[in-house]
Image (cartoon, rainbow, N blue to C red; front, side):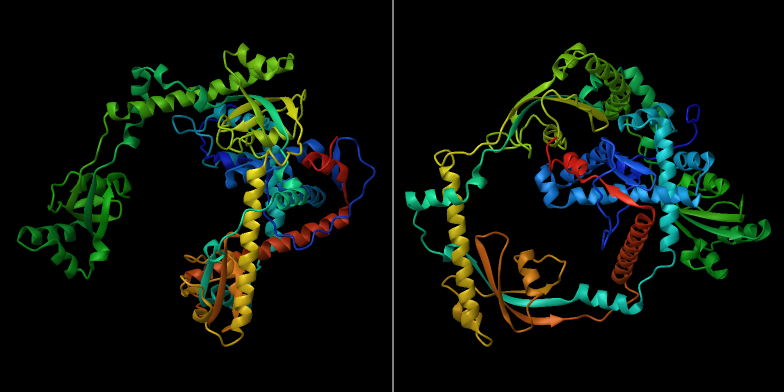
Length: 633
């Protein structure tokens, strides 16, 4: 359908494409009312919402996409156990069911969107640009295929997104927080506290003698699971991205210079001029004013006589293309510095203009930009080559070749990692250097197994193929293997325990009227911190302490662990300030927007829960567990 369209443009943000395509709704569900039913499913069905079915593979793909997204934010991949501990599996399940419920609701309500409107929404998005800046159908096909979409499926998904937004917009129309709610929220958010405090560290603990062999062995026996060797996997993978295959040295100067000439205007910094303009209703008045200037009056004098202020005549420092009237622009940019023009017949009347400053434009040379332009050309060529290599790689894989064999048929070399754990670390405990930054290869490998024909991973506008070649099971390490780690952890716990006891004893001794200086250990100063806010940060005061401070009444003492087990704080709340609420301030307006979004989320969440109850929702929990790694097949 999109083939043959050439004149629209759009702007694609790669890292958010899946959120846009799949129509992710960021919802805050206070209660999720799904009744789990464990029967009546096909082998590949994970959930049904009315007549809409979610397959296990659909959910698995969405779940893995979310893990990769979160892994990029944290800078390291999450293990399945960590993901479940954070509740990500439940959140993604809620997401896909919510989307399916809205799709089913739209179908039952008879909502729809024409092909023309769907196409318009795609083409009017500043997206899918080629080298020339225009909509490129080949680029469109390449991008959506990279993310696993056919043209028809992409259009269908865009239509679903539009209908979901229609429903959500109707449900939340007119929601605004009351003034009372806004005032209470503002006071809560902007309350400030001041404290005086002591910071206790391992320096106050004193000497901790090394544990005896018996004590260390006993500690190890009680904490064996913390020192187990993780499961490792041997993985071979091939990365094909524009960056990895682009060869700018193969781009000729002729091709690069051609692109330079096409982009010359965009690459240049245009001349700018400080321009003032007086517009007259007719040519006679303009000519009369120009005569006064010729006789010695200034441009500013003429403006003042017409009751104009500087702000009424100054256009600012502008380029020629930024001026609305072409005739005035042509005259202004032909005028010498500090000269006043002759009357100019423009689109809005007859004008006199003055130029008081000229900033020359800058035209970069081809030589200065040649490396960058060649790289752009190479990347553009590589994007097309990526899809070609993708198809050839898939053909080789379909023919029974593993990743290493298939890579060789393309003249490429796969990388083999002998051992990687779920977190992307090797046996030395360090991140595996051969895994490219941002590639959640370990997560994917641990969601697969030896001999499994895996799907390619979308990565940096390209693809990654991998095979799991071997599995080294998790095992219990002997005390001799991890003795240093065991002793270090034992000592950390000893320090933390002693600091906790010391802080508690100080608070008890201080009572209600003591002074911190009276209980401060030698060498520990009483420090102060002001302007603490619930969600703010403060130099020297960790978030854990700030949180404890806001649970402590004014003038009372408290204690809290710092950022680590090796520091503890004893503090007194010296002041509590609740600033007045300024409903017109930018901060309050920002808070209001956040409250509106929260109210919208909750309203849509309640509506979706109601829809699910009305149309019926069934979840195959066994399939969910298998898709998220909570159970083995």
